[in-house]
Image 1: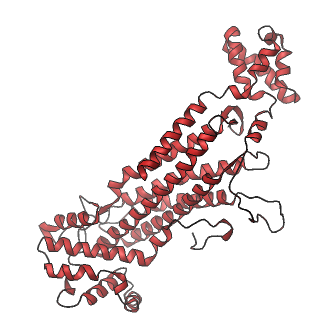
Image 2: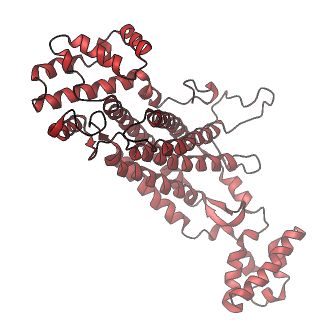
Image 3: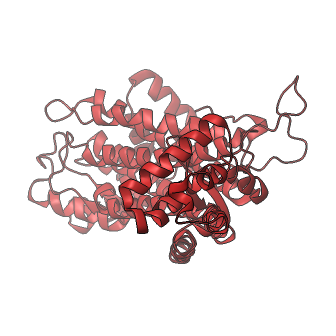
Length: 451
């Protein structure tokens, strides 16, 4: 996604773009170089004085950007010019201990996981904001009747709060997945050129563990540069999250259509929907969410391809993984920030929800009538009777209640008052309100833990 979002749908940048800018990644790599020096000094691999000199100099703002840029142009290498510059500003005699026994991917992969951990903290915060806003919606809509729809058609009545409860349930599981994946995702890798510890020998695992301890990470049991399932898992999890966010946005998009008119995303005063149609109040935020979510999901196949590393290392798959992670991460931030905005400002229109319930002239209550008749006629016979009345009402565009009352198979058991009572959609919402209120507690509970 571009660094500049359309002004008309601008939402505060959650900060993911800044995390994935090259300068921030470089600083993360330098943080790993510093941790490497400390870990090696603790084990006597390099002098303590060298680590003491390296750590305070491992700051990008202390370095000469012109030297770094020239080095990248000359070498075409991902890390070497940064290592050179760190060694230069550390100076003699300690600069020569920079990057001792490590290889590029050890540093870049571990550093990028520091960036990813920062991104995950932002994602979790945004999910918490969304859940808090959804809790308010579920509470307000717990008993707000709306047409339940299956296959695009009226099914049975539900409540808007029940719909939101389903969203909350999915989002809570995504948050749980991200939390459960953390020990697998955030792991330091320091095994040397081919992951064999040849450059560090028996002390190699201890160096890796020392780096991990300082950076607050776990560590790889086998530091093979060909292992990429943890990076792929991250993108797959973001893809799952994106699928749910897109579904929610599409639902709001649909319910916002003129023919539905049941909800409306925030449309701030002055927002222009069209250059030629002044009346337009377009679902721009929802469209942004759907587009960003599609971009996230498009990275899932690339992340899986990035697991196909040849032999002990292959830059091809590293490039794939970098692209998949950064693209998915930035798009996820945009998507979640917009979903939070939609949920906070969603306008509910219960009068349209109620009016739409009556569009079928009572047909939405066919199941309730069938079950009541089934007490005396048996379920299948009752189904056949109600089916005949329902199909006739639909084809002849006549009130369902009138068709039922005109059928002697019905009138023998239900009078007009009983039929009218059975056709009230507001009393046939099952446990929707209970589930909505239970989801409110769960959503607010997540927020409290996250805070």
